Amino acid sequence: MPKVTYIEFNGDEYVLNIDPGLSVMEGAVNNNVGGIIAECRGACSCATCHVYVDPSWVSRIGEKNDTEASMLECVCDPQPNSRLACQIKVTEQLEGLVVRLPQKQT
Image (cartoon, rainbow, N blue to C red; front, side, top):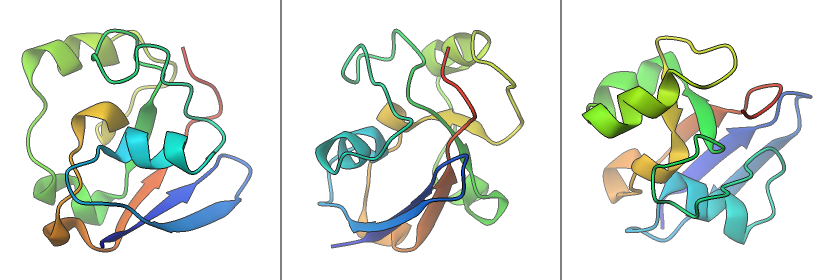
């Protein structure tokens, strides 16, 4: 099971084993990681699972689709490494992925 590190805005860090096939958002919600609201439960329609992907991982998680890119226009403090955690599927190749949570969700 791949390990994903979630770092809350306040610095709290969670290193969690996430089942392959789940999204990074589902891993956070299933493990009570604060800062991921996930109002739409993964439908890519709310942007309340906004994360900043560690720069060393950006090229390894795949491209944003048009829907995700549109939703990211609505988040607070978007950055080039902003992604929606619901759109990042966990695979064995993402072992060690690090994501940081924004100060607030939209």
